[in-house]
Image (cartoon, rainbow, N blue to C red):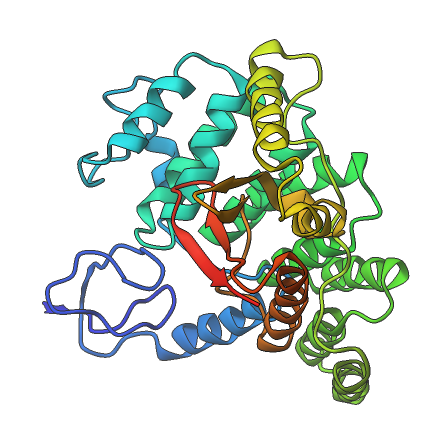
Length: 362
């Protein structure tokens, strides 16, 4: 019996003596011979390209089976094989989540998603945390969308689609989620269902590069190369004229309405924010963030500490932002800082762990 050298799930080369694939988390198993099922591996790799053509800015994968091994106790809150918790902040989040409060569960889930970029095992943890949240608040759109995204990254298409459907029942005009659900249908070879979702996304947001590109892949799968070529050309036209931008994000309430444990912490933060920056030289900078159509929805708080402005952002895809968008944002922030003075400094901080994502001066 020989050990397999490539992941039979995604085609990634196996690290020496690795038990799990570093790319997707799939468990390696012994092969009966050295001749693996190459056609199947190639097919999976091709489909992986489709995922990267979807709306989601970051694709994080893990072992699908981990979510079934999750338990509800604090001490056994991790799947088998998960590294020990030596992170004091994570321990605090788990303890808060175990109170059953909405804000505690969401804080934990969002932190787990952030950490999954470093350790993919956290993605299954996030799925389990969101399932706990949705048992108490099954109609909460913010958590439904987040659960769909997490299962998307786990490669659990059926589960992802289930949550996307529930979310879209409340917010049918979300072109980004129609596109993501279409990609999940495409992963399941439900090509006509995928095309229907892509067309709905285009109805909502006609200049959507990702959708045209994915439609070309869908029609290739149907054997209609002529239509596929038309959509590829259209995708390039959109990219040249409008860029590869996403549809506007639907703004959602992060916490359930009327839950005192969920609402109070955010209210405290907002009061602190107002007191920290009112009448400071950074007033125009703060206003820029609060009025921005995208930044405002991601900013948890804005404060000034030791003469430095800090914008604390939650789930802000800094690393995945296209270069042209990042340069444009940087230019606008620097222009606002110039109004504050030559010594003005702004830090973009990750609300999940407090790390500095970027620092700007005029």
